[in-house]
Every structure is written in structure tokens, then in C-alpha cells.
Amino acid sequence: MNKTYFVALFWLMTATLFPQERITGSWEGSLRIRDSSLRLAFHIEENDTSYTSRMDSPDQGAFGLPTTRTTFRDHKLEIVASGLGLFYRGTLEKDTIHGFLNQGGISFPLSLRRAEKPGIYRPQTPVEPLPYHSEEVAIPSGDEKITLAGTLTLPDRGGRFPAVLLIAGSGPNDRDETLYGHKPFFVISDHLTRHGFATLRYDKRGVGKSTGDFRSATMQDFEEDAKAAVAYLQQRKEIDPANIGLSGHSEGGLVAAMVASENSDIRFTVLMAAPGTPGVEVVMDQNEISMLHQGVEPETLAQLQQINRETFEMLLDWNGSEAHKTTLRDQLTRFWDHLPLLIRLKANKDAFLRSQFNALTLPGYISFLHSDPSRYLEKVTCPVLAINGEQDTQVLAGKNLSAIATALYKGGNRKVETRIYPGLNHLFQEGTTGLTDEYARSEQTLAPAVLNDLMEWMESAAGLAVTHDNNQKQTIDE
Image (cartoon, one colour):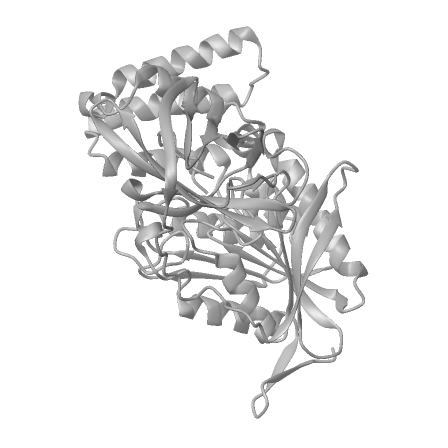
């Protein structure tokens, strides 16, 4: 989850491309911004009758980033990152794509040429053949117009299995929660399935192979999608319907709490780096950390945070009227004017203001600002494991775990365990600072200790026993 007010100039997210000759492969180019340049690359692969692609921003240390939608017709390529107001349009001529990258209404010339795809070493990503059954599934959502695409994994033996639904964090995440070439949900799913669990992970609406529109989705929409996934698991003959658990990362943990608060059939819930404080407080904390690490002086930081709080509270009453739009633009201009000169010199004012306006007025962002996890956690009755990394700079560990535990206890739930992992960041990687620029540089997807702890806690919560001589799991009769 990254609700930081300083929106990076270039956020790159999945793409689905329609088949077209000579488009597969790697493409790279340099974006000129004033006196500097930013290298970008697209990696396009064929997938049945369509294409998938990833993007790299090497100068920002970001690799394997997904995008939202891509079309390629009559030699014209368009790639859209809808949640960020970013898109690329170009025309393929021989081995060069000539076009423009647009963000916040500002266009930058960008030509792409064929290149070799750089290696990204992610040693924890599972490699086929996998020792279990993996199935592509289609999940009907509560909205009849939306179908979620996902992957169901089942241990390679007969029987009915306890299942875990994996719920991704904020942003247009695919089923693996792919970020910087890391696939944490694939890694978790693999580990759990090897130890006797079925798992289900899915592309968010409007992402990957799922239909719908991510840009217009709210927290309530994400809740409905997760509820539909639970219902899907309950009707599968291989799944024990009374033994289904939820595991949500970051904003996905909030979604998990929302679902568990309304469904007493949920066997257990795992909250990984999930918010426990209201949405406004989460983004206020993120902004303070971001500005501190950019060297903003305390007095200036206090002024900027006051503007932030006024802006976020104004967004709680957002109705999209011209009056509200004018007020928001005025607030963003005030924020820009108070930024340190060195920060302003590195950015384009118009592009900054437009990208901020577009990001802040997304329905999903506004619905997150409205969120108060305690309202749902107080109604969760199943066992809960809440974990976080000590170095998390996106969801502060101590503050949010304490709020989670307090809300659960207030509702009468005593089956609660919280853990803080020293030296781990928001993605549960081992790091030094916990800042987001470490995510891409780290070869580790998840710390092994976290994987093992998750598996062991879920085994206990699901009533599984391990027969150590053959590592086979058996359900304990209760």
C-alpha cells in the first residue's frame, strides 16, 4: 500500500495486449525530462490469444512492474496505467515504436527500440514442474458484468482441503501481487500448497484476465470481489467449506477484515502489514516518513502536513462538484508552493498538480480515506494473526498492530496474536531502511521465517496435524 502524497512522476503498472505481428519481445527507450533522462522498458510476451507485458524503470531501481491495459491495432500501440493517469501511445515502424508518454496531461516524446530483456534474479519464485495441481479459474463476482480470473492450487492427493484466499494490497495488482519482479502471493501459495492447503489468488477487477474497471473500484467493490471468491471456494468439492481462511496484505488486510466481519464461517484471518488506524491517519504517516527521508525541515514538514490533513478531510466530503475541484486545486497549489525549492526544481509544477489531482480523486483512494478498520475488526470472531515488519514505512508496525489488537479485544475476540519482525519492510523482505527503493534491489521476495510462521500458524488455526515421518497433514476432529 502506498498512499504517499508525493506521487512519483512515473508509476508503472499490467498490460493485456491483443495479438499483433512483431510486437513480442523487449522494447526500451529514454524519456527526456529537462536536463535529465529516465530509461524505460516494456517486455511483451505471448499468452494464448493475447499478450502480457511488464515494465522496467531501471534508473528508479524498478523492474517487472505491471500495467493496466494495452491495445495494438494497425501498428498503433497504446498502454494505459489507469490508476495513475499514465498512458503511452506509439506507432510501430520496423523495429522502432515512435510515440509519447503522457501523465497528468503532459506529454513526453518516447521512442522504443528492441532490446534484450535484462535478467531479474528472484530465487524464491517457484519453477515448474510444481508438485501439486494448479488450475486457471473464473470467479463470477457479485456484479454480473465482472468475472475474476484466478489460480486455484490443490495438494496432489485426494481429499477435501482447508483453503486460504489471498487478497492483494492497493493498486492494480495481479493474482501474484507482482511488484518489481517479485511475486509474493505465488511464493506464499506455493509454500502453503506444499504443506496441505488449497489456495486461491486472483487478478483484481480490470487487471490481467479479470474484467471490470479498476479505476472506478472502491473498497466496497474489493470486498464484494473477495466475498465472491470465498463463495467460489465453498462450492468446490475439493474444499472443506468449514475450513476457509483469509490472508490479506496491506490494504488487502482491510478487505479481509471487512469480509470476516460479516461471515462467521471464516475459519481464520491473517493480516499482513494491514492498517489498523483510519485511512487518513495511514496516509498522514506515510507522507511524514516520505518527507523526512527527503530532508524536509521540521517547520516546513509541519506546514505541509497541515495542508495534507486539510486536503484529506476535504476529500471525505468529496462530491466531484466544480466547487470541490477548485478547492482541491487550490490546496494542491498551496502544497506545491510550500515544498522546498530543491524538490520543486526536480519536478514540473503542472504535471505534479495534475497527477496529484487525478490520483487523489480516484474512488478507491477516497473510499480508503473513509475507512476505519476498527469498525470491522470489532466484529471479527475467528482467530487472527496480525504481523508486520519493524521497518515498514508504509503501515507503521507498532501503531497499527496495537490498533488492530485493541479493536479485536474490544469486540470480545481473544484469539489474537500479533508479531513484529525485526529488520523487515512492508513486503516482509530483509532490508536496511525499509524504504520503497529497497523493494526492487532485494533478491528476497519474503523472509523464510515469515513463510514458515504463516504456515505453522495456519496449520494450527485450521486444525491440521503434521505426521512428521511422511509430512502428510490430517484434519483434527473437533
